[in-house]
Image (cartoon, rainbow, N blue to C red; front, side, top):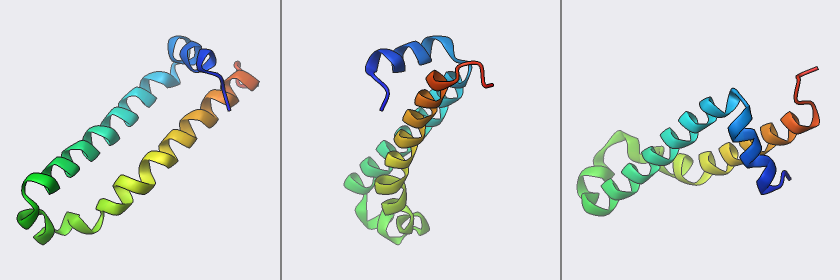
Length: 83
């Protein structure tokens, strides 16, 4: 697992970091919206088709994205030039 300093260095130097910012922000924003929607309007939410996909998006997507991000950082520092 990469150290915190390696993660910060990756975020400053790598061009891949910009796409990771967008992907992670999009996923977490979507999760926050789904959770708040379910808490404040459960009767509408449970009738909608998207209620089927909530467990996948809340419990499976974030760990997969975080693991992929950490693996990308580790791979970047193992071979930063992509050779």
